[in-house]
Length: 83
Image (tube, rainbow, N blue to C red; front, side, top):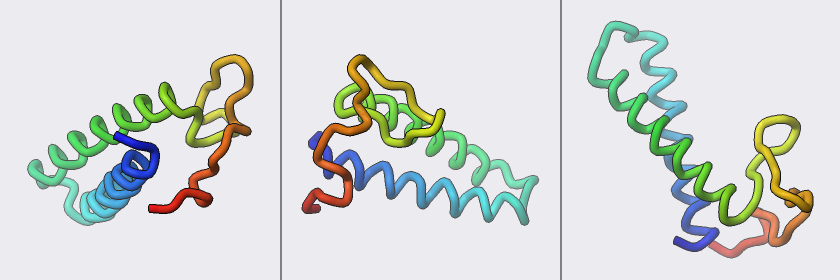
């Protein structure tokens, strides 16, 4: 999968994770949404690790590690890509 495709999928999974998180705040005893949240979160984390392994860190300030040399400055920036 290419960079724009991976970033789009990460954004989609993050949206679903936030939505499920909000739902679970008001429905904490429902097992199906909790299972969905856990599955989405695992897939999201896997996809983020794969993206960072191939293209560099997604976030700075202690959220993502970097290989040598420092990869945070590599281009293109996500907002510079055409989707």
